[in-house]
Structure formats: C-alpha cells, structure tokens
Image (cartoon, rainbow, N blue to C red; front, top):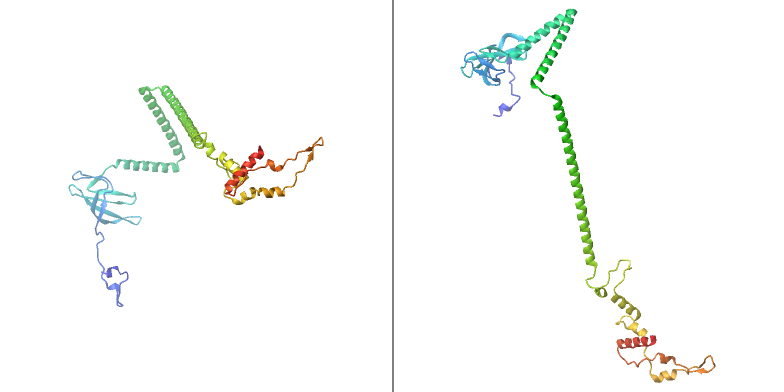
Length: 336
C-alpha cells in the first residue's frame, strides 16, 4: 500500500527501456465517454425527439484522414433512447459546432441556414464592390430607396392603427395633466396636514412642560411655607454659607441674653459681673463725709448719697442663680 504513493521508484542499474515491448493499438480505437447531446435531434427510425443536454454513454473515436488546421476531428456514437438505433455526429472546429452525420436529423436549423445565406450574400457583395466603384453607387442608391419604402410602410401602418383605434390623443394628454395636478394638490394637502400635526404636538408638549413647572413651583412653595402662623416663632430659618440669613426670634433672644449675661453654667463670667456687698459696719466706717455743693443762689444743697440710688436687698450666701436674680433686679431699678 505504501508503494503506490511513492513518486520515485527504484530502477536497477541494468535497466534498458528499449527492451520493453510496445503495445500495438489500432489507430481507430474507440473509448467509452460520458457526454450530453450538443443539439436537439430527432431519430429517423422511430421519430423520437432527443433534446439538448440529454446524457449518454457514448463511444468516441478519431476520424481518419480528416484534420482542420492540424486539429483532429472526433466522432461520437450514441443510441436512441426508444429504439436503440445508432446515431453518429462529429465535431466541426471550423464553425465551432457539431455536425450531424447519421441516424437522426437536427432540429431548428432554419435560423442557422438563413444566417449562412446572408453571410454568403454579404461576402459576394463586398467582392463586387471591391473592384467596381459603379456597383458601390448602385448599391447605395438601392439601400436608400429601400429605407424610404420601409419608412413609408411604417407610417401607413401607424395611420391605419390610429383610424381603427379612434383614440383622441388630446383628451389623453388632458387627462394626464389633470391627474398630475390632482397628485400635486394631494401632496400639498398631506404636507400641510403633517406640518399642522407637528405644530400641535409641539404646542401640547410646551403646555405639558409649563404645567409640570407650575406644579413643581407649587410643591416647592408648599414645602417651604410654614403650616401655622406661629411656627415661625419656634422654627428658625436656614442660614447660607455667607451668614447673611437671620435666625428665628427665639434664637435671637437667647443670643442677646448670652451676650449680656453669659451662660448660666459659667461661674467665671458671673463672678466678673456680680460683686458681693460688704457688711454695713465696714461700709459706714470707710465712707467719707458727703460734700456739699452750692446751688445757683449760693445756698448749700443737700448732699445726696449715690449709694441711695443703687440700694439693693441684702444678699445671702447662696448659689450663682440667686446672685444673677439680684443683679437683674438692680438693673431694672436703675432703668426706672
């Protein structure tokens, strides 16, 4: 099995190819090939039609003593599909076609025969015109007369058809124009309707947007507005980063109280503001005699003690809250 795939086989040193006997095959040897019918044909024996492309197992042979420019010509043998009669045809390299030889007739040959006849006539005419200039002039005048006759015949046929049809071309053109006008009007109406619909959609969208904006503003107002008029006393307003907004009333009172008095829990601030009174005996001993001043008439005015205006109730040793109350009462008496 491996030897069949070998490209170079072994040849012994004493190999002589001239000693190998040659096969003597006949020159008209036939081979079995698979082919399709090259044209439509009809069997002469039974009249069976064989169409182009029908497949056959044919025998092929080389035609003896026939060559075309050194090219060999081959003959094919097939059998009719109905009566098994033998049909033969061969290649035609001169016309690049196949030629029917025996057993059948080729169909649809009329067109090919006409073409061949026209080619022969054209070839003869060219040969005549090549050596005779008067023949060229005659052929041209004949061709021009023929063209004129053909045009006249065509015009007569057109007139005859128009008379029989009885068609008014003006009315047809008028109908066509009216149809085009209607189509244009319809297109304009559709364009106007589309533009109107687009404008309506834009207007509805704007109204919806404005309604949604008004609803959002109302919600924001409801959120920021106090529920009761008295809520402003208990709730303070929010301050911004710059510190320009105001606080509520309660916060303002607390700040003023802290600025004037200080925190209740801070003893240092209260100690600096409140001074305890000394006993009465020491106060009388240390107080100097009051000076008398003359009024405008020269009479001595009664001296008024400054301590009378700042009388305060006796302070007992107590908490800082009691001292704070005493200080506030003294401030109220001074203001009165």
